[in-house]
Image (cartoon, rainbow, N blue to C red):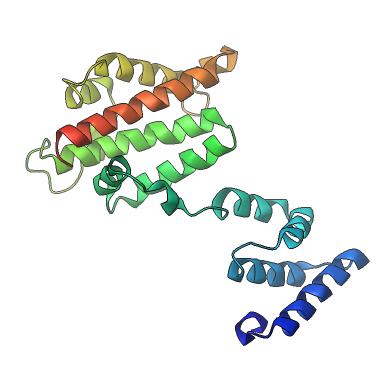
Length: 215
């Protein structure tokens, strides 16, 4: 209500009260709620208030840091990104998996980032197969049909190094402790580099297939 009033003095008074309460050590959940409402409506521009939020609720600050500083839309810049959007279109689960992969990557959690990304790759492969007409008379993407190496090798056949990339991608998934009990990547000191490299190569397969099939 204060923000919508457009009264700068009222807004400053409200913020002043928040900082007084914080310094007095009486900050509570209502203060957090007010701070969040202000930050959202001011596009998270108040650095000092963000510091207070971090002090009192690290989880909310982490949500701001990883999800609110920049719009997800800033990544949609070129034809490649637009092809990606067209491929997943209304597939909300693929969007979620891709978003979570980005979040974990930004935290340098490469094991969890790859776990999300490989599942995203599986889904978008089914989406692209459906959109390109490869799955024949299917009325919707056949997500259950894309999880084995053979299906992916067939789909991406003709793209340079596709079989080698797919084989390595499945090996890393099966060695990922978040995806398979073998957990081989725990003992691999170069696992982060390997995961980042295969991520790029799977991106390459998606880009090439979507481009070659006019998606």
